[in-house]
Image (cartoon, rainbow, N blue to C red):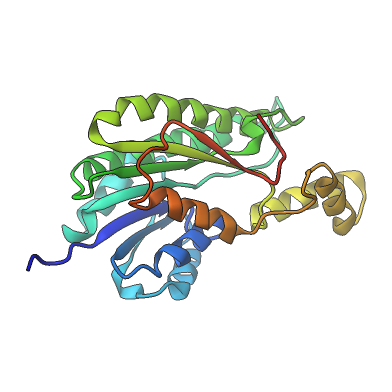
Length: 259
């Protein structure tokens, strides 16, 4: 009998929100090992504490834009853990930007777009050598890649750029059976979403609850998504049952955008 080989999933932005929920869900599969990546080690330990089989997983506290940090971290992994069959490039930041002094344009694009690109390219060698027949790369884009929002030019641009990256890399990697997709969530119940709604409330001089209800009024289903719903989509896209979807931006946003 051949020894059982663990398969590893890498999740960036794993310390909170969608990344944390995805880590918890994937850890329930006994054959899965996780590499949890984030800027804040305390948050990563918080996620690890909620995962099953904590000893099977590893934490990288790095700046995802740093190729050197990725390489140094992967060097510390044992060979079995580097059987990487999937990368969920989920890390990102949000918020407004305004031209002039203090413009966050460079910061937002460098983390959301360049950081995702570096995460993919530094993980790619291990994905290519995985024992799985089909491998997966998933990026977190946004419904704001589909339509514009005032004062969010950097965020909208970075998330739209990820859709272009998805299409290009899906063709580039198809001969290696690597499926590349993006998800386009709308409002999701995360700290980043709450901070965004709070900023809108502060700007308009309204209570948080009123601004929340106003934002939900623009959504056809009149609700915010739970991180666990997004995690279930990631689990499916990573599964061995999924061998046909590639090059797609998958909308999961309560009807905020419809083709």
